[in-house]
Image (tube, rainbow, N blue to C red):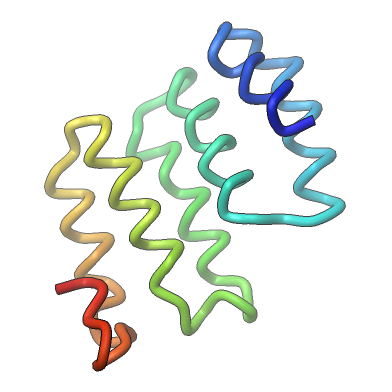
Length: 105
């Protein structure tokens, strides 16, 4: 169903995509679904507005200590030429990065 939702997003069929994405996110949310949701929202609003979905996902208790969501948000924003937004997303989790891996630096 994720592939079908992505096809709907790519084809601009946002109502069909939204129904599938919402259903999938209710049964098992993931960063891939959040990215797809943001892509769909970006076609209807600004990338910065669409990117707020990442902040909501990052605020969930199980995601609060992870840098993955903000790294994905940064990629999303950079792909839409919002370099400042991408840098801000990375900076927001710099203190949480693994000191051995340094995934933000």
